[in-house]
Length: 73
Image (cartoon, rainbow, N blue to C red; front, side, top):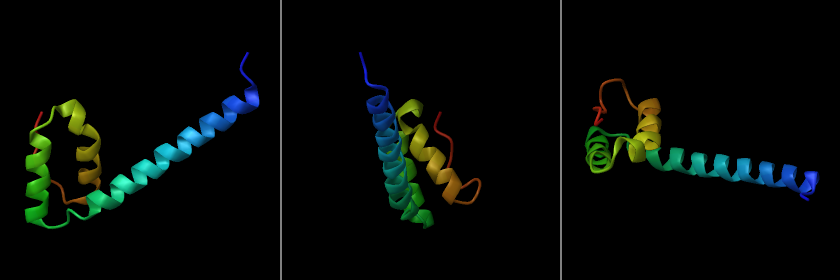
């Protein structure tokens, strides 16, 4: 039998870890702020499946002007 308090603590610890990971990735991806850097990242993402690159492409789309990142699907 699982302790409900332990389950809640685990849930919140997991959510915190996910938020910290997402914030770290957002900070790292923000460094790709020049056209050259964006093209480099785009080339890296093109080597991976759409499923694998989806999260990073979404972050880049939030940080760069529309149309700069081409779709590789």
